[in-house]
Image (cartoon, rainbow, N blue to C red):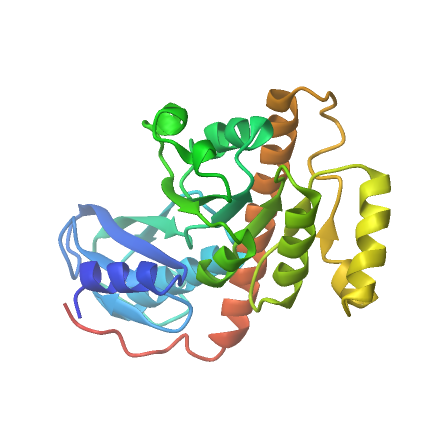
Length: 288
């Protein structure tokens, strides 16, 4: 499998990776500029030249995965028998610089309820690279004319009309962050209850007041939810530093918190991948 097929497969499998590209070559080196490889926590595809050069790039790539970083970085290596290296000597006599570009798992956010706050929230989140699910039981909230403000979205927008909105939870990707803000407290309760019963979801946020949550806690307990489950629900949602009750202000606050949660989840996923991939630093590299 070449690096491009590998990268596409890893993205489809929602597996974090790093694209390593040979950017510059001075003197002699095992590969020319432009050579690429893809590194995940437990595998590598393609090659940038083998030996110490490739082993070092692989290690640095896995450190990026473990940190959850989204920022690219440059790695320069001197291929000399006088250079102190960890994985053996390559004395080609040249110097290479490689670009390491993290390819994080595309995050998913599901907004249940595309009313005044929901549409403002969708406008902000749609400017980010993510899978954005917009779910509402009311077809009128999802009319193309109303969602035209998302026509230039960076996000992949999935519009879901679900008369029983909690049914849409079954189709969300693993790790999806769920935001509940429908027009009906009965719908809100059903969505939160079923989200707590679903496997593999990320955060669960509920819009509303302390008194609303007090009522929900009682009802959710009656439905069989325990304290550990209830602790997964965040309400009110958003960052406390952003105050105000206007829909656009609430949307800014909620978006800020969701972006924080996405970064936190990337770090957690990276740490998990590092543990899963422990001991594979010497994995055989698949040829191009």
